[in-house]
Amino acid sequence: MHEKDRIRHGGLTKESDSRSRSSWGEAGWKVLLGARNTQLGEAAVAQLASKGLDVKFVAIDITDLKSIEQAADTINKNHRELTLLINNAGMPGAFSRSFTDTNEEDLRNAFEVNFFGTFRLNQRLFPLIKANEGTVVNVSTDMASLDHMQNAAFTLNAFDYNASKTANNAMTLSMAYEVRDSGAQVFAVTPGFTTTDLNGNAAGGKSKEAAAAIIVGYATDGQRHNGEFLDEKGVFAW
Image (cartoon, rainbow, N blue to C red; front, side, top):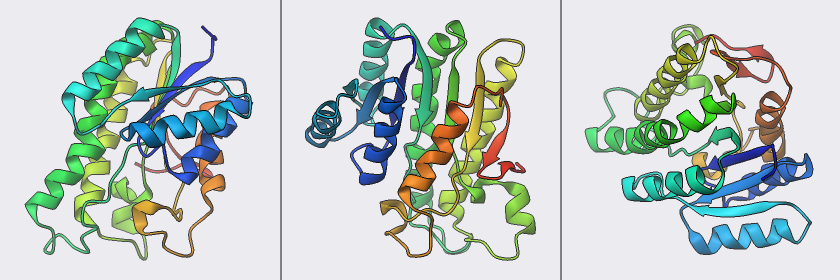
């Protein structure tokens, strides 16, 4: 087992994630690729392996408790030296434009993926991360910041999506508090507005490569970021 094992889950069969996985593999990490779609996940592994990268597939549906338990059991059994967990699963809900326009079903769906699914996986892998003095990175968004929502001149007031990611930020801080006196760390990163499937490939965002580089950069810079919320410029207000 390589000393730099890591897993990333959520949307991992998409083009942007293929690039970021390649960055990890080229940096010498053993990558555990988590994806819901087995066929697409295994195809992505084969593509990366053909480039000489060390990548293994782990089936996981972040909306399915049994799937999460099976994936966590596999990792706890076969990858005991896990030192880095990237939580990148996300869905937009309906991307409601206001609190008034939000319906409860969309809100619940957003929370199921963006908060509860990540919570379930974190709880099952956090003991391993703590034992190995590793790192958890919860990928977030500018709009999860209460400071941003209060003070930004313009923002997307998507209550269903934003609220679920704000809850994720609260989880990040709780986890970080738990490891504050240890070598482990937990922090959040927002790559900023990025053109992806999540927003219908909206124009004007940064490239997928640039977004991946921000996350990879903070996860591997050797600095202690426990309890921080980071964007491309540095510390971002909660």
